[in-house]
Image (cartoon, rainbow, N blue to C red; front, side, top):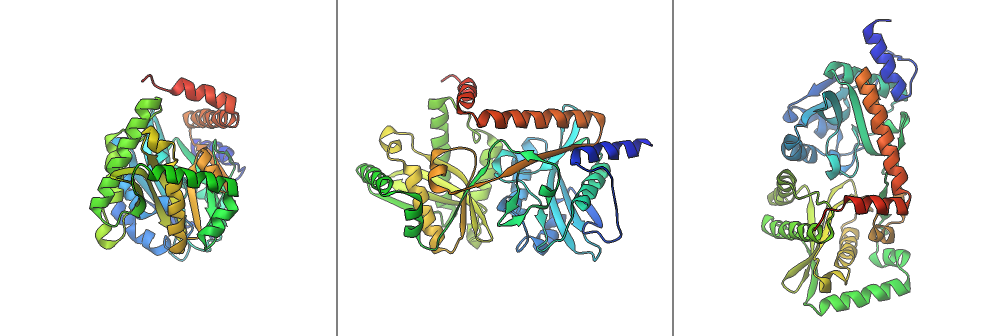
Length: 401
């Protein structure tokens, strides 16, 4: 067995395959690896609109993230455009390549700012496990990678199977939270909140109104979006200072990404991230934002004023209810509140969406890194499933005030 065969055999072991079979009729007959994002725009236009993809794999999201956070983190664009035997785009893998401790690794772009990581697949794509294995092995060889790391992939999206779920995988540390919008807000509210819970939330809303007139609104122009984003950053900064919790948005690149994603595109009525706000008097009491695609709205950011008189009235939850009312009227069928544990997600969402991680090593160092990576993710899952253990870790991670 030559060196190339040894590398392929090792890679397939981690992908859960024993042999590599390449037939004449393949959904991924050929592919290109693009480092120029504009060169892939036509492929997105061909399959994204009615294909299998989350909003975090839109051309706009991928482009904005790579040009801001990706650039700051030295992530190189590695967009894989696969085509079938008829020359049609069959899949887009929006990957980023980076060096980590001397290793050349790749994974889906978006990092922690994308709740769900996945490829973009042509509608009705008929693909088997071996075809995906073949594609990943060929991409790794062409890009001279040591390993792939893929995290937080949905097993299914909009009731359609994620093709990567056909491969060997393990559960992610957390899961997604989603709710089906019932075409009528009151029906949704009755299904999720008891009479007592609604009474309690109504009391909070009245208490909040004592601080000033309360109203929710959506950013329809760049100026309003900028105002809401400034409030969001202020809320997050104050919360981090008072709790010692890490602030994912206390970073110049993250701020630049959010500013571009929320404040641009209003002239064409197409901002990448839509922002909602809850006003209480002359203050912004809460901010909520998300991305949308194919009848589904994905909550991405949320914050609320940390002033005790505001915070104790649950302004974030009040705003989410107004968001659900608006999305229902606009014809959306699904809302998700992202990945991770929170009380308000349990209250608003009836569905836990399973996520999985997978990784593949193509060199000895890559295979060792994969083993460590998957073990670390499994330990994190173990901790998150045990409140006592998670409480200890969360306390240890808090920074001194």
